[in-house]
Image (cartoon, rainbow, N blue to C red):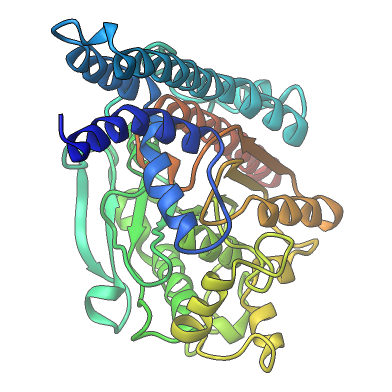
Length: 424
């Protein structure tokens, strides 16, 4: 066997274990390593049983014709055993998310939160049981049940369009709860497709109207264009969603990554005129916010001043100003700066293994809100979850979606009970 072939075989033998190790403990030392760690670990951490099946099949193929008796064969068996143990640990972490999420809900809402939702008749809808041993599909690729698509909510063409998801049974005037979804993509990419499908599909089936939006993207857009568009979309929803069966008085907002940043900022800066040029009088408040793995302090994501490459990315392409010379503008663009007693109920979700947006920022926003907000704050830190974990319909995502549904049911129940009390 030539040295080149020997090297290739050794690399193929070690790669599964390396990928598993990265999923268990990803490197996060700045670009480009953090991006590699995310791209290599995201799939492994969310679909460990599927990865394990593929690795075992590859190992069996490698060991054919008696190769298991050779040194490389024995090494492959040992590495595969280590990788299998790691993948099973990842599966256990995904299963443990159910406990973590429930404890977070009880800590934030109180032990009787589920009964309160049930008393108002808005408890979570029944759904298929989640089997911990099942391998969920990697992507929800089927077309969503759109009520309408490509609806214009502002003057920026395609970037100011939104879709409406709603079950066909929902009719104009039904006053169904509304979820507005803000996509991620580093403020530079993304649209209404693919992101948050597991959550929106679940809520749509439970009688919600879901509204994923587009917004202007950098480098063509300069801050605060992005948040202005999110506010403009909220104003459109408050004015028009009744035509699609939604309740304009009960709108919640969610988003992931850059969308998590915009989601949190929109919720915490409700009706701030500086983010509503030309529509300052529009109501852009929300009933609750559920940001996923967002950036909450643009100046310091990770307790060490922020990942250098990421801060430079924002400086060059998004805010287009220096964080040193223009510090107040950077602070003003950070949700952490807006934390105050007027915040709505918030459920923050972040993975402990996030390579792209370290979890420290989420921890600090959760602490800040708990100190000053008059409303409940639920913080769930999901063990060994990577960035963007919820794009996959993985076991962890299914548990997370159910937990978000329970949180929103509690918020909805309180709203309905308070409205009934006012009417009475």
